[in-house]
Length: 474
Image 1 (cartoon, rainbow, N blue to C red):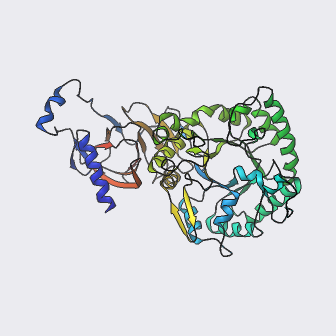
Image 2: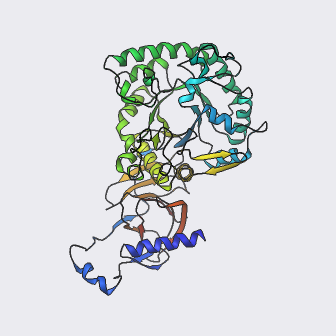
Image 3: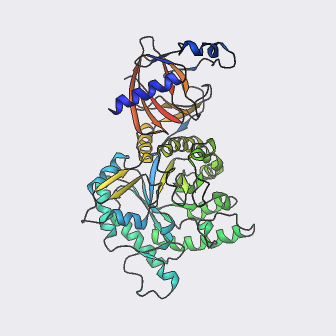
């Protein structure tokens, strides 16, 4: 039934754009009706012919971006992870299955609560102060349950250490617990968004006074260097800045001082902290898709230090996202655009954040995992762009953003993106049969089809605000 609906949708879109369906994978520009013939003959309404692309694309002589890590990871708040681990000694098999479906991506315990988390059994009761009373104590069996999950799912682990309200003995316990839980790689982050430590309101990212960057960096390095004793020889990712520009002048110093094995910064193109900033239109805009480009200088600093750069926390809109925007199919289309932009900019990975809010890719309720549209995009990205592929933006396709992909069998040859509010046509040459997988801002799910043309010229139309992966025939 879904396949029939998808075919019907594709046919209707083609007709609405002035194309008629001829057969599997072919479109023709026949007139829709005599009543519209005057529009077709008028120069004002005459459409230029669609761009043509030859498959497979020749990468020779042009710059490309190499994918060297799994492109999508996950970042969860400590209390949310604890909630998802509740139940029997081992968490729901459905959660492990979901993580495997996503490709067993890196899983980070981080976010705002990282700097509010204490090891189990360390907090006094009753709390002696308001600040102590605000802290979160990990359940006693947290790490054993996490070990059970990671044993089944195989995700690498990043464990966040409390640098704002913690102490060395707490850090040592977090490190020991994480080491007991990890099964496929482990690293640590020292504090979350330290560029905001001076602020009373975590939701604010206002630019600090000009004299405060140096003081804030110096204090953070003192604390982080002290806590790093607990980490020993394990890798460190950071500094997990909320707005990397806050520490732009001192970031190389931080990377060097902490011997970070990866540079991690956060990026949200929109904010849901106010009432009007996060809308579907804004999420589907070019600025939201291309936000990673603004941090190209972070990639340059990381490369100068010889380490990779990650967007270690990201999602559609800060403050947990907005219902009706972050949990809709539009978020799936945005995510593909955002991740491809990040990879081409030079970031190696994007970790999508879970806070228990509308932007979470999935929700665990008892033994059930409830997937949201964003999850579909993350699973697709990790399947489309495994480590080892190369990406090359194409600039000659009218009305579409296109990225050529070079990789092993089973990866797409091309990813097409229609950023417009109208359907866009394209002709693919060189293949008699192709497979496509489509994400559409107006329709949830990943929609696969096979298209065929005996002439090896396949005309197709991309619906408005849609992304399509094109696979060559085997």
